[in-house]
Image 1: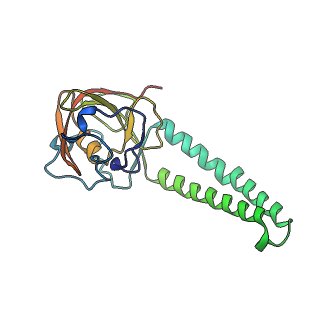
Image 2: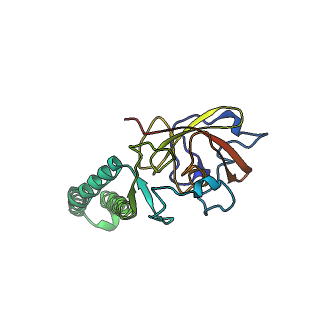
Image 3: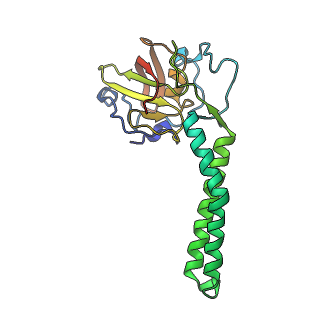
Length: 216
């Protein structure tokens, strides 16, 4: 399931709480905000001293990754820059031998595939250059990057969210960016706290029910 309002890093398969739909605002594609400017006066719990963020400010370009995701992406990048580029060049040279490149469909396909490969390389380089390793493998008293957080709406329906990058894979929770309004609101909060954040349909309130580490 993807929720556009959570921005480009929001993916996952968890069911959204029913209480976050009209008439009361709910966590739906229509109510979840776009990737955010930091909110002032909303979700003040998120601005508390968080040991993971207090002395290490991040920018809007920061990409939070688990160690597993970082290692996987680094390996993919090395593969693409070596064997991937070599295979792309071989395919282009083989296509050249089939005649005039201006009327050579195989050549055009090979060039298109090379373009996709180079685009992925640039994406991975940017991601890894701006990556920070989350500490989600441990659970403290406060929500931190990489944690799985169980939240409930005003009707008591539950949703699990993972505060990380879309590059982190999980079937247990919906992945949201820590820089999104909901992610920003949750960071630094503790079990039992209520937080609010701004959505297009108005302010939403959720309660933190549990803080866990990703499974698997």
